[in-house]
Image 1 (cartoon, rainbow, N blue to C red):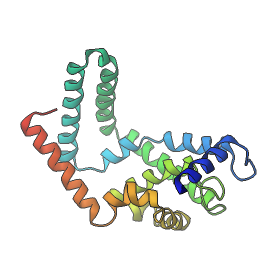
Image 2: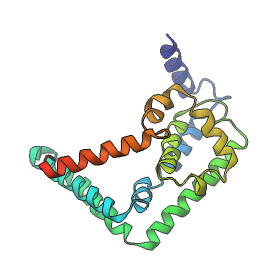
Image 3: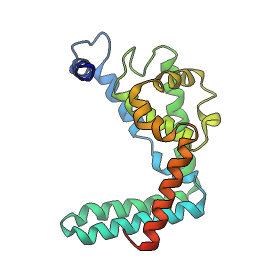
Image 4: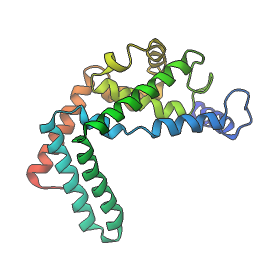
Amino acid sequence: MLLCRYIERIRILSSGFESDIVSNSDVKEWMEKIQGWNSKLFTLSHIPDKYRLFVSKFIRRVVIARMAQSPDLASVYHLKLKDAYMTEDKLKDPGALKESEEQLIQLLDEVESQLSETSYLVGGEFTMADVMLIPLLARIELLGLEDQYINCRPHIVEYLKVVKQRPSYKAVIGKYFSGWRKYKTLLKTWLFVCIRSVLRKY
């Protein structure tokens, strides 16, 4: 019953009937801002080279294997493979890395400014804009960079405290990445990649 009410609430908010509470255009604008930042490049640039190169090679082999298994989807997998190589090239470009960090800082500054006025990104209601922002902040914490990017922004810190109490956060992110759990998740992922690589099961 609660789930149905929640879905209905999201539907009403998204439909624009409560325009005084939340604006669809504002939600869309924030979603585009968040999506415009290359989180993959930032993440990989903060992973030690020996681990990053090992995982990158594994991912490319998986894509190639999937391409062979599904020739009809070859064009899709080819784009994924191309993106993987382009990302590797960008990781060697100091200018691209600096631009990625500057974009993140600008985005976080805008978020901090917005949260100084509202509880969530678009007013007092939790929207899809927040759904997209939370994984970004969780990614920063996972990389151990919260002191550099989050803790210096008090409104984002307070915002995170609130969203971490949401059942959805606990079920999707907190369950795997809160406290010691993140080390368990990362270890399991690393072992999975290593075993699959040894067995050549891509």
